[in-house]
Image (cartoon, rainbow, N blue to C red; front, top):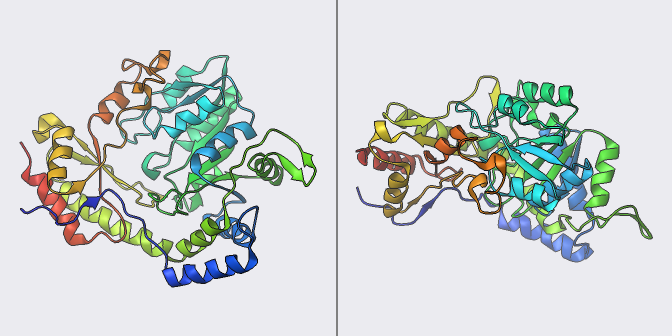
Length: 374
C-alpha cells in the first residue's frame, strides 16, 4: 500500500469560520478591550458553565497555569499523590508549588490511577490527591472521594482530556474539590491556548480570579501574591465560536472511534479500550496497547513503520513522568513501584483521531497496522 501523500497527524484542530471570527475581531478592535475580563471573556465563562453543567468556570491563558493556581487556591503543601501516566505538566504544577509528587501505579483496565495504590501511598505529609482522567475516561471518582474523606485530603482532578465527559448524565467536572481543563489546540475544545478551573462555590471562584490577576481585588488592593494567567478577548471570542460545532465534532470523533474499534478488535495483540457503560465520552483520543508476543511487533516498531507511511501516531504517555530526570530521584518513581504504568508506557500508541479525518483514511491506517504484523 502506498503511503499517504500528506501527513496524517495524531490530531488536527477544528477551526471556526474565519468570516465569523473576523466579525468578532472587528468588534474587539472597535472596543479596544483586549483583556482583563472583557465581554467575550465573561460570556465564555457563563456559556461554558451552562454547557458543561457546572456552577463556576474561571478561564486561564493555559491549562498549566490553571493547575498551578488550583493548588495555590487550596493552599496545598507537603506531598500530593498523582499518576506517572500523564503529560508532564501534571507533575510540573506540583514542582512549581514546592510540593513533593508521590507516584502511585495505574489500573491496567482504565489506565487511570489505582485507588488501592493511592491509599497505600498516604503518609502524614500527604495533603491531596491529583488524579488524571486519562484520555477523558473518568477515574474511580467515588472510591477516591471516600479515601479523601477518610484521610481528610483534597482532590484536584487534572481533567485536561475530559471536556464534556459525563457519568450518569452528570459532568465529571462536578467531583473533587477542583477540576482543571486544558483548551490547548490539540484538545476536543480549544481556544488556541487556554484552560479553566471548575469550582463549586462563589467564594472559591472569587479567590481563583484574584490569584490569576496578580492578587488584585480592586484598583488599589492586592489580597495576595497572584500571577498573570488571564485569558484574553481574542481567545475567548474564538472559544465561543468553537462551541457552535462541538456536538457535531464529538459525534464525528465517536464514529471514527467506532471504525477503529470495528477494524482492530479482532487483531491478535491489539487492545483498544472499550466505551464504558453510563459514560458519555468525548473521544478525545484513540489509544491502543500493542502486546509484542501476540502481535509479533513492538510498539516502537509499529510507531516507526507508520511514520514511513506518513502516519504520525504518538506514544502517549511515554516516557512516564517518573522516568524524566527531574523526578527520577523520588522514592516513588521506581519501576518496581509502578509495574503497570511501566508496562503500559511501552505498549501504548494513540492513533490519529479528529473530526475531519476521513473514514477511508482510518481504514487505510488499520490496513497498515494489520499488514505489519509479525
